[in-house]
Length: 97
Image (cartoon, rainbow, N blue to C red; front, top):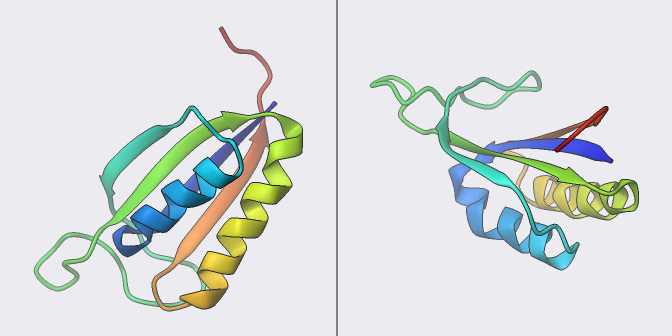
């Protein structure tokens, strides 16, 4: 199993949920407002007067075979909207209950 952490501009919300649904990812934890600044450019999302926009994030644990289809969908979403910002990170799950 793998953990996938997805951080994205809030404008991506519906499309990220659609990507999860379309790749049969059922369980996830959603963090509605998270701040941050991307490494590749774009504006910070800090919820401040100077940088008012915010990100959201999702943490999900999926079967290994679900990772690539999900990342492919997310990559397309990011490619289609490069100024909004979307990142996904994957790491191994050692144990769960």
